Image (cartoon, rainbow, N blue to C red; front, side, top):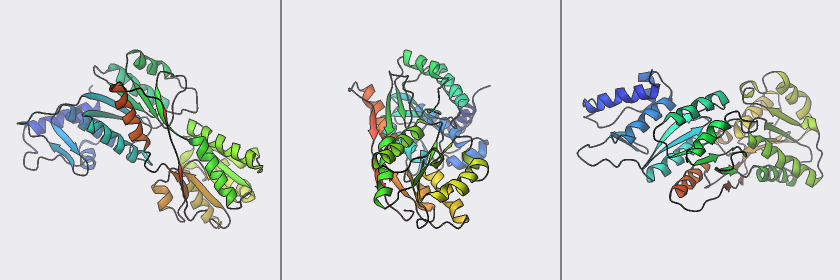
Length: 356
């Protein structure tokens, strides 16, 4: 049985060639296509990317997928690029993917989008799919659970052995020495947030970090190192670790509630792994009558929409103009052009808001 995206593409291709969209020369929106075919947005995007590669449609930022005038020569994409992220429509990923697609479009390259949901089993399925492709020029990938030993390195090595260049985003696998990466300067970010809180007068600073992604380990390292350098209290109990699978129930039951109610009251500030977790934390603290920032200052990473939508707004680290997706895509294009390249680090800038 053909993959779902192939079936969606086949149906749309037939309609395009039969003139179904001839009047407006525009395909329905991604949301409408998801409803029409009862598939995910990822599947729709893969189908549209295939139609772009065939010269049947062209994607225009802000206006959708347009039917190409087939009386004119089709600007066939130079390369087929797989883009693998943990998520597509959640958190910071839309902005990362938007920048990736902009760079690839500028270089006449077609992205094939995949999401792993941060599950190594899904990552393995995606990699096997890529290995079955007859044409694959490069891979942009956010590694899955990069804080843990990965059982899929054998498939990554097979791609490398075939000469397919890999560029990792956000997290990577140090064992894959033949690949490049664009990473957050996570340790520096952890230090920045602790230094900032210390300058605001805080002495007892707690931390909440993710244990199955390398970013969590790196942010913790910067946080812990800054506490030691400043001579601030550092005890095992002040750090709470959580996993991908525990995220949805975080602070709602078990050890998360115990941390909220028995550990955090002994501290005046907390560094959170990212804005999503910080937003959930603020909601639970406010529910318990804790005043932010008077009783507890909260700071975080990513300066995402969560930091803006939370009340009070959350002080957070931002990449500013250094979008990881754009940097990774440009790095891959440089590899194709034979330009000497090395891995890059995206710096942080502190955006102070009402939570601290």
